[in-house]
Length: 283
Image 1 (cartoon, rainbow, N blue to C red):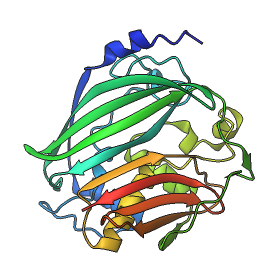
Image 2: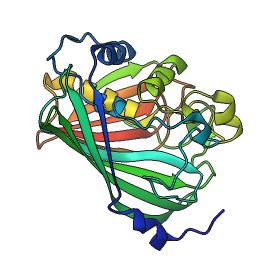
Image 3: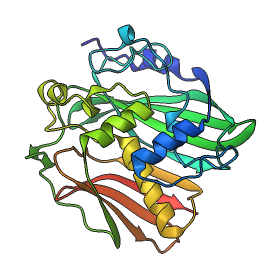
Image 4: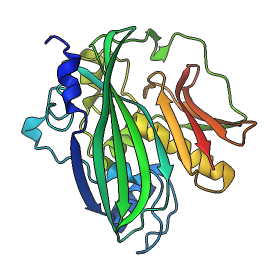
């Protein structure tokens, strides 16, 4: 492995990338089908929250993908010499809604690159800020945290379930069937070729996981939808972070409990497993 030179990697701070894509009714229909939603797909209708993660994704040619399915590093993202890349969490502040028939534009900026040591060894965190507009209206601000780590699996599992204290059950609970078609559809929606979400032999044999890994953004989207269903309105602010992986080896739950300050605390958990992703929704 190439030596980790944080001073070199921090030279990517300030790097910018712009992207744009038309918000089509077809995309909204496929998003709705993936999440079993009934949505208005007429021009001018509000699109669902977090559909911006399905828009303007890098269209890297297949020959430029690495062994894990991710694009090669060193362009927009710094060339971190650690093999595993995961979405660690983030925060989204909604100012308005993307509308069907409009064009989304996004300006992405690397705002920080830091390092620390975790259970699996050195970690590098890259923070990206996104400003998203729709036909000139500023619709949301986002902070995205990406973590790079070594090749070792950082959880101990038994039959696909992390061996730790099981997560508590929320006041509100919904069960999700953790099926490979759901993961595949979401990877297709987001043009994400990371093999841990659809290639079971690679996931088990190379990365050492017991099954396909449920995407962090997929979990965050489901938690946002759960919060919206419980409160009857879209949150204005949504913060989330990944704590541990969940797999397609067992179903998982969406949990929510009201807090004293009026926010909603949410988390996912594999059946019998620990909290996998936690979130705070605020109106």
